Length: 598
Ligand SMILES: Nc1ncnc2c1ncn2[C@@H]1O[C@H](COP(=O)(O)OP(=O)(O)OP(=O)(O)O)[C@@H](O)[C@H]1O
Image 1 (cartoon, rainbow, N blue to C red):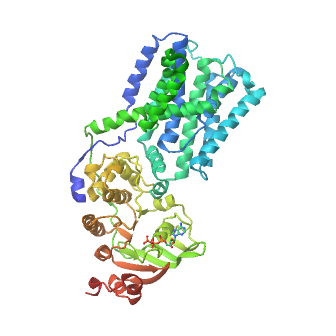
Image 2 (cartoon, rainbow, N blue to C red):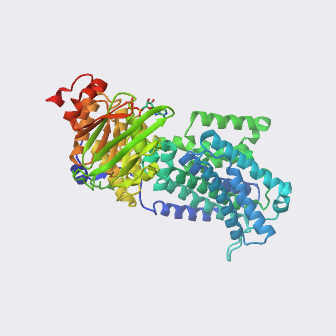
């Protein structure tokens, strides 16, 4: 493992997520010019034009699914409803009320976004299949309203003669010009969704998708992130639907029914729901495939269905995933980012209280997992919390970090009362943790995992994208994993995934670091390396509370030890005093520790 000083000296040479806001803009501009030129050759009306127009508008809606499902992991079976809300916004606004197309589009998109945010709010209490049920219900309600509120929506007859926008100098009433508009919007949306993935918000979404609990303890407001994902997804759905209404001049409720939501979802999954390019590919294929297969006459639908099923079964990342997984291995390492020094706010071992816990209790029904525990971690100290299995150590960390609500007691960090604070708020104030059972973000690279730690709200560099990369690299360097920065974290060994968790916590420059059984599951060599790592951390003056059963490790690093038994504190003091305490020997050690008595 290399030192922090080395990290600062040697620039990293890695393929890193770029922080530049304008990244990809030149390519976007070129693509827009190419599309404008190509669309001048497109037919002004007819079957082919309609098909391309359908693919373009659908793909905008499918990009929304990439955000909510691909990035944030929230199932939505109501994308056609948002698409319909956008379409009816344009249809009703521009036809019945004579509003300019753009105003009607804004209203449709606004209504769709509003309902998307409302659905996101439902995700506060619901997840998994319950959330899926809510989205299906919403979809059915929208279909019912579109069909039965005849006074507003024209009912099953639908809305006819929807005008297209008119701008001076542009003939958007012509099919080829309107197609160019749709394609330009599609490209901007695709670029946005692609950039979103490597932005701070996009990383937060992916962290929520991969592990909500770990995300919250990295300072991510999980609920807000989900609501944003639903809002963005609905916005894109509404935008696609609004342009669809202008494209075909006629809309009816059956075009936005539940079956269409399944079609949109299939498009996203088939192409690759984790990439807007995949969504584009999937949409294009599913619009074109039925046409290509028409020569099969009666059996074409069966062949189409079988093709979709086969692709989904054998390519879980979709067609785009197949391409990018190959590219990931082939991409040469590029880009240079100077790593930042780690732990910029070196703690002085001043001994003042950093984390103060008073009278902490946690009861699970009749079980008192914690029963009035007092514990003070002092600044700059390594404090060990030990005790037999089931004595309440992990519960203590879960209550301290906000994952469990305490039954009684108070928690203060650097003098501030955090007893009622949410987990992400505690992280914001500088409390970091690792988990007994590793919780890394499996869909992301090692570097991205650690960047999420560096982006902890409240961290000094959280708002500076380049510095976030630098800090993450420094943290990886500290744990000896910089060379693995671009690997998917799930491909690392168990021990190295633990180091990624530690690096993620370190990158946030925490005031207090809670380590829950960091040696669990490590082999002897890895335990030796962990001991060296903890000693180096101690050398930096970082304030640490460590829970572990490995007494050799504890003795190497602890300045102070607290012992729990049946949820109660039975000893607290210097290692020498605690490890020779008869109660501790009886309850936990079994025999006196030689080193402690030496
Ligand atoms: N969510 C929960 N619901 C009910 N009981 C729980 C819950 N979490 C922990 N417990 C119980 O609380 C007690 C303390 O568990 P805890 O995991 O905190 O112990 P521990 O000291 O960390 O044990 P170990 O060293 O084995 O990890 C145990 O009896 C456990 O079964």
